[in-house]
Image: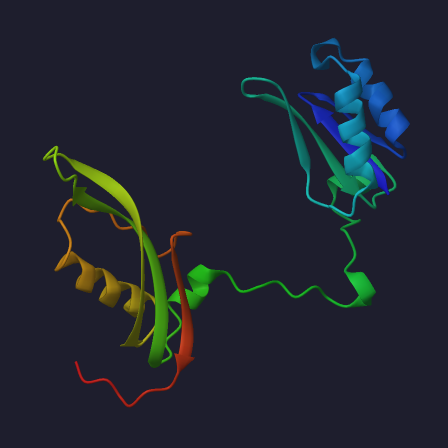
Amino acid sequence: MNLYLRYFDSETLVSSVDEAIEFLDNIDEIGMNPVLEADIREYAASDVYYPKRYKIRPRVYFIIIKTEAATMQDFKEKRALHPAEDGQKERQPIPAVLKLNEEREGWYEGELNFKRVLLVPGTGKFQYRDTQFVAQVKAYSGLDCYNRIVGHLRERVDERSQFPSAKGKNFKFRYLGEAKPLQS
């Protein structure tokens, strides 16, 4: 396993952590210290393959990338991508955004975390409160499930309440099973 390091125009491909630390130690702005050195050694020894970014000062970073590339040219041409384990092609999970629009009529369970406006007793003032709402609805897709839940809530909560995007992390859904055809 080799390590690619880059700080602005300075870049290198090294075969050991000691070489990487020596490269970084030669760049005065980085300020190599025992904590940073220990973190780099830990990253190199771990099973993590995503790039690691270290902050030097606001908006200034250096990066380290693990690679199987033997030369800088191989790395630049992406010839040595990380191989899949067990020789099998890694199965990438389907992004939730793609599942959101997949039409599959039936029952869905939707979970929505939103900011609800509530009156504070005694003060007469209003405040936003994180609220979780879970419902089972008949829908055509995950997006239809979201729209039905938000439509239901808009009729029942203060109009200043804030609802998250269907594509965000504050909305989750799962398909429960088939239902009789919907009649709109």
